Structure formats: structure tokens, C-alpha cells
Image (cartoon, rainbow, N blue to C red; front, side, top):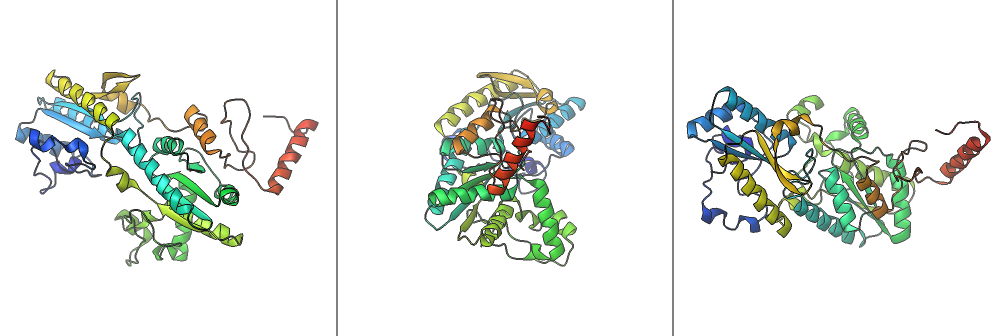
Length: 399
């Protein structure tokens, strides 16, 4: 049986109509995008899940999802053990974030990266067709950003959640790119610059502007799944609680409006567009490498369940397919993209971007003992020269 719409399939009356996965029904699903079962962001109600499984006589549960879903699957398994239920829960990592501890990669990651590459290329074509085109692509995870930017070769700037940046310095560099080739492409991770975006939202709320139409056209030219907040008569906190569109003013829209305002002040003609291709990426059929990968992992998961193995994760570690206790995955911190990592260093070599942090705040990121300084105008360069002179005279010790 296939459970509809994730954990919702255990609680929602309509979703409880599970899908019978006959050989004929699943014969060609690897050729289609999306999911025949559907997905949702609903949380796991452990007691209800166990009750439904017991009522239906289910003794093997295969769960696919991200690290948070793995924690929920672990809770279900531990709950079954406490109730002395005969249940084997086997987890398969599947996440566009690709951020499981120890696991080489999640199933489907190659496909979503190619989807992101296609999206970047299409935005690049559009941006190069207008005067001063600036294309902003917001992607769902840092690792997807890194891989897509390196694979595409079209991006000029890659901004990540774990690497701070100054928007003004970013736009100065974007202006330099436009001057050189006529357009610029920015790839940004969803959730980046959280502190800046929070302050921006608070300012909009104080000015009453969070109910306005977004600057620069529609909120999302690619999907349109996020809409501006409509005045509801409720407070901003209440609207946030009930999800009434406040999240639409995120880092993508922040960068878009910042770019428009910045280049207006510079007197430079630009056309800024924001794209969030998440649904397009999710609709892509699996690549050949992912089809083979899924086949191997699925077989290993079934073997584990029939062997009576419980509370386990099936994945590839150092090119070997292994079983890992869920507790090892859930107790370990999720890997994040680090500014000092080799993968980040490879990405900045691909884009040619400098550090976008304030002068004097750039960190060691090249691995060769030097610090990549932020791109700055002439005034900044003069400040750098003065700093160097102070270092040479011994007025300030080198740190």
C-alpha cells in the first residue's frame, strides 16, 4: 500500500484512502515526475500512526523524507517497541537539501540539481535578452545551489544561508558584471540573510507596506505560489501564525527590491526578475543515475524489513550501501555548507565572485593562506591601502 500525502495519510479522512501499489500501477512511475502518492509538510502524530498501522495489520513501514522525517520515523519505531507491536520501520533518505549525516547523497539529488541547472539557464537566456538584466533564482538548499552553480556555469553570484553577505557589496559586484557583459545571474539559497530579511519585514510592517503589491512585478515569475499579504484586519503576528502570505516577502523578494532601489539611485537602467523553480524541479522525471540508485536502495530496504531489521536507515556511505541505526542519524548535526569547505572554494572559482562581507570581515576561503577581500569601490580600495600601510608600520598587529 502507498500512504497518501505523507503523515497526513494517517489522520486525514480523504488521505486515508491508501493507494494499492500493484505491479501494473508502478510499472512506469520511474518515467514520470512528481509523486503518485503526493507529499505534504504535515507533522507526525505518533499515536495515531501506530493506531492506524495496528488496525490495518501493517508490520513493515517504509518512510522517505528529510532529516526531520527521519526523526518522526524513529519516534514511530520507538513507540511501536514500547507497545510491543510487530513493526519494522525502514527509512530512505530523500531530500533536495541532501544534508544527511554520513550519507553520500539522497535519492533524487542528481535530478533536482539538473532541474536547477535548467532553471538557471532559462533565467540566463531571459536576462541576456533585456537591458541590464538581473535574474535572481531562489533554490531550496545550499548543497543544491553549490552543485547547480558549478554545473551550469551561468551564475555570477551564489549566496548561501551559512555565509553572511552585505547586499550593497553584492550589488556593486552585480553592476560590474552588467558593465562587462550586459546582465548578471544571482543564485540564492532560501533562508539566506535571515537577519536582514527579518529587519526588512519589520520595517515593512511598521510602514504598513507588507500588504502592498511587491515592487518589480509579480512575486514569483516562475511559479506564483507565494502571494503578497492581503489586509485581513488582523495583526501581523496573527497573520504569520495562520500563514496568510507573510512568508512571500523572503530573501528572493528582498534582493529583488534592493537591486531595483540600488540601481535607481545609481541612475542605471536594469530589469530585475525573480524565479523560484521549486515546483518545476519537483516535476522532473528521475534521471538514469537516480533510477539505478533508487532501485538499489529500495531493494536493500525491502531486504532489511523482511530480515526483521528495525529502526534503520538505508543509504550509501563512501560508495557502499549500508544499514545505519536511525539514532546515529538523528543525534548527529546536519552538515551545512561552510565558507572554508573545498566545495565552496570550487564554487567561487567557477563564478569568480569575491567575498561579499564587510571590509575586514572576509574569512579565509581559498585554503592557500590568503583572504579574498570584498569587492569595493575606490574608497574601499583606499581604505585597504591605508590598512596595509598601518600593518607595515607595525601600528596594528596582523591577525
